Length: 93
Image (cartoon, rainbow, N blue to C red; front, side, top):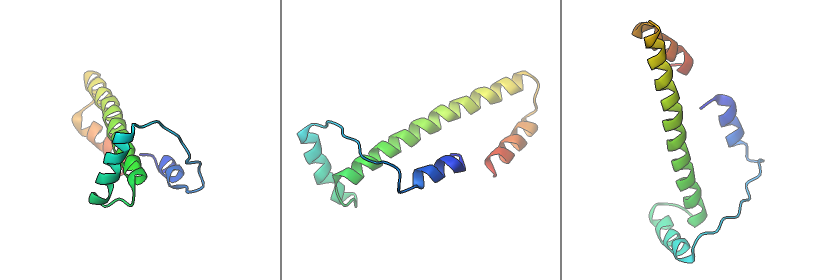
């Protein structure tokens, strides 16, 4: 994740109010499960579930883009060593 995007996500002053409709029985299940998983209430658990799913999807989608790019670079004759070096520089690893 880019540093600027992460910095924006950590900004506590950004708006956070959203209303969604969730069935009452699901809310009751969330309320029951939240403390068992160490959450202070069901809303932090819902935020965790959303964040987890979002991160997973972003990683998968961004990973697909990187995989496609690597395959195309190889098709154009780019060596594995150069691709590894470029990825290492881009990710800071």
